[in-house]
Amino acid sequence: MSDLNVLFAGFGGQGILFTGKVMAYAALVEDKELSWLPSYGPEMRGGTASCSVCISDKAIGSPLVVNPDVLVAMNLPSLEKYMDDVVPGGIIIVDSSIVQREVEREDVKVVRIDASRIAEENGLKGAANMVILGKLFKETGFCSAESLDLGLQKSIPPKKAALLENNRKAIALGIEN
Image 1 (tube, rainbow, N blue to C red):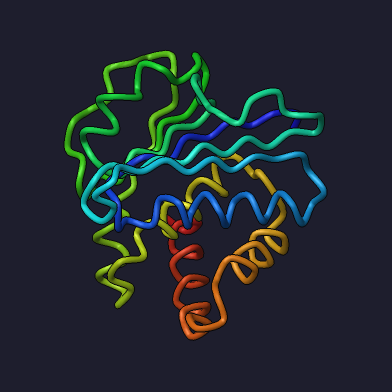
Image 2 (cartoon, rainbow, N blue to C red):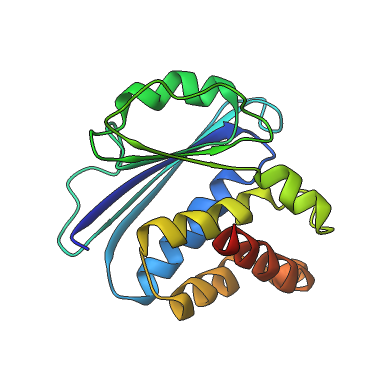
């Protein structure tokens, strides 16, 4: 992998920023150049949130992802706002539990995963973001499985350490589906 620019987008409270952080730490473990740029509205939970993650083998010129290689859209407004910005040949990953609209582009790969439903049915309510991260990992191989797990461990604060296994399970479900 030379460069990978990912834009995560959705509502505040869906774990958009956390998902990007896990990906960034996984790249850091592999000594990649990286940037992680969170963006969210003043209302936080329920407002808009996005996160740009750039991973490269060489220095990164700008942390802002304007034309992502991969768009992760966890809600309809995010899909509608960013789907035309994805580079031809890129990937759009959609939480199809929330977004029913079809992507009307033939020059990108569209990956629909019922992430919210999968998480909920497995007792992991609120972990749809990690299901999607597992799918992103499967589709792009942006790091090794070991680095992804280390990135997850590094991202979870000590007071939430009990959530590690649930997050691991959610990532595994994303890889399987």
